[in-house]
Image (cartoon, rainbow, N blue to C red; front, side, top):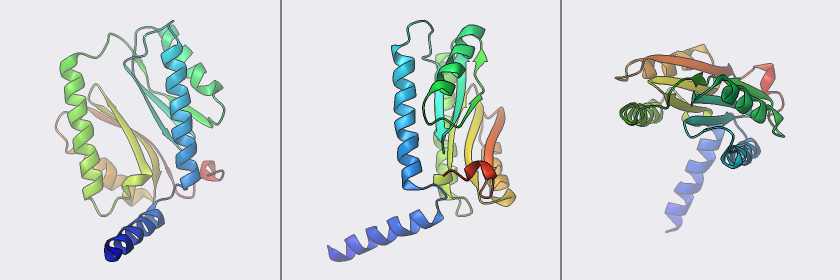
Length: 180
């Protein structure tokens, strides 16, 4: 039993070494995610059930489909008004609700991409968050450099059903990360 505990501790320590996000930043992002989702759930003015919220280092990425321009704008304003948000990236499109079949395809793409990132030893998986909507992968995170970002994009390109990849990834030395 002590050997397992030692191995687990070592694994956690090593995983922390390759992640560019602090534990504090991760906790803040989770709190922000819950607060924003709560605000959307309580708002009965618009249908936000087809909206994805992805947060990494206080950068909020909104994706999915809104039924109207007003709903898209209101969603963005809500996100900007949340305490702790540094940047809002609004990739929400206006249109009809995502069809069930497309939602199933998106879920499969999401799963395949997540596994591809975990399996690739040249990618620090914990440095990325993403969402998939209508066959488009929206990517948020921090790359070690252009080579790692190219690997991430390459993993996305080979997945069946991916129509586009929209990266909102910064590099480790990006000045926007100075607060993390």
